[in-house]
Structure formats: structure tokens, C-alpha cells
Image (cartoon, rainbow, N blue to C red; front, side, top):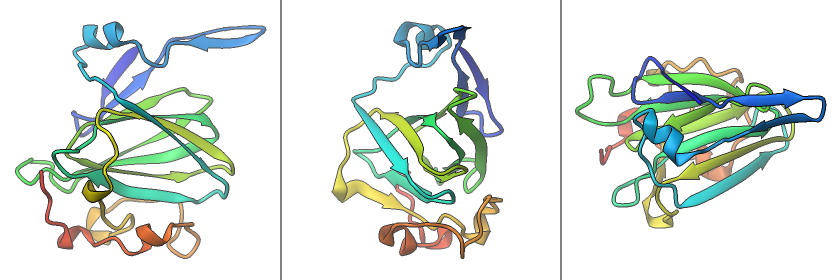
Length: 183
């Protein structure tokens, strides 16, 4: 497993070692002791799985507020996504900045998004399936988010607002300037 800090150094791109042969491949997508040897100590409590039919489906930007804040480890098992993490820690020198990565079933890369970051993604292929581990349980009372395409964030999404497929909830999230970050 290789861990690479991105331009927001708290957000890590993890690349598992894949062993391939004529049958296909094998890899460890998560190994606590290997990650601890890389300085990553996190205890996951829940696995989530989403499947998005249409290409251009946007999920996010989401986070949970304390005491149910969540770190996430995101990976794609079918298709590909444009994955985004936004720093929403008020006192951070990178507050409001984002980092992106393309995750796919083919590249097997994973994005580790710590607490204090909003997360979202856009599917780049139809029928994309995403798995992600979280270190805290889901709480509807602590579920929050902000507009995925707020110009103040400067994210160059691979889909236009008119072509994006969104949930009703995501269509009504507040803008970044309206966000009263709890972090």
C-alpha cells in the first residue's frame, strides 16, 4: 500500500498493491497494521455502498457534524468517479480549498478524507459503484452538506449544472458562504 498526500496534505490517496495473473487480481483494500505503519490510525465502524445509474450523477458535498463527524475511505468497484474533498475547518489555512482525484475500478486507488472535510463525487461512467468506510455511524440529525457547484469553491466539475443528476436533498443544500462550519 502506498499513501500519497495531495495538495491538502490531510487528504491521502491510497494505492493498494494489486497482484495480477491470468485469473484476474487480488489486493488488500484495507489492512489496519499496514496503514498504521504508514502513520494512519483510524477505526472504521460502517461500510457504505452506492450505485449510481446515470453518468453525471453527483452525490455531495456531504459531511456529518460533531459528535458524529466522519472520516471516509472511498473506493470504486465498478466504473469511475471524480472525487472531491473540501476543507471546512474554520481555522485551517486551507479553509474552503478543495482537492480532487479520479478513482476507478481499474486504478484501485482510494481517497482517505478526514473529519472536517466535505466530500462529494460525480460519476464518470454509467452504473458506477462506490464503497466507502466511515469511522462513525450515520446520524440523520448530524447529516449536513453544501452546494456541490458553488462558484466560491472553484471546483472544475466534469458535468454542467444542467446535466448533473442530483437528489432532491442535494439540490437544496446551502452555499459555502451560508455554511456555519462546526469544525
